[in-house]
Length: 182
Image 1 (spheres, rainbow, N blue to C red):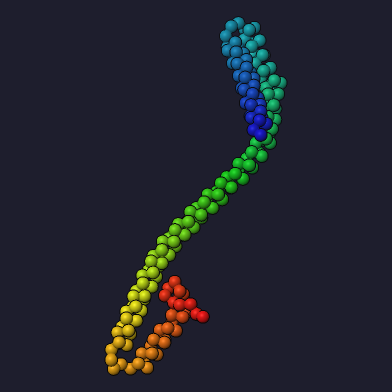
Image 2 (image 1 turned 90 degrees about the vertical axis):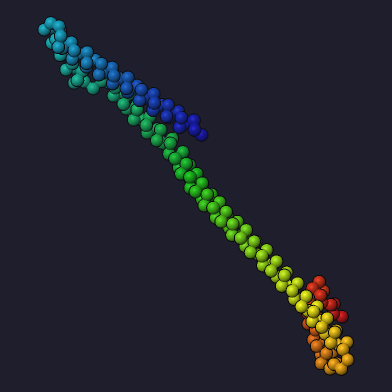
């Protein structure tokens, strides 16, 4: 895809070198005529002045052609460069969007990592709370059994406490100390 662009660029460089060559030739002839118009005999000086006037009066065809060729080559190079510039612009925009998306993804990942760490802390805290609750329930059950075993206690009140504890366990999963309802 770059071949037309490179060819156009080479054409511009060739035309530019041709223009420089033609101009240096033209300037060399003018400098030569000016130096001859100052030295030598009267006839040679007048002849050199006439040549100088001729050179300055005419628009040299090779130089004009080279300038026109250079302009055409520049236009062709601009035409072939336009799609590449458009593609470059699109690529730069895509790169900017990709970088923005990468930054957003990085920020989202960081937020997710922070949320994960917070979740882990909450999970540990919840597990500790569950263990503490289990320990307290066990203490309450042991205390209830101890009170039941003593003589002279109110068995009706203890039965209700035992029944409420049994009902509460009905709503707890088996893995957490509950029982299966029939």
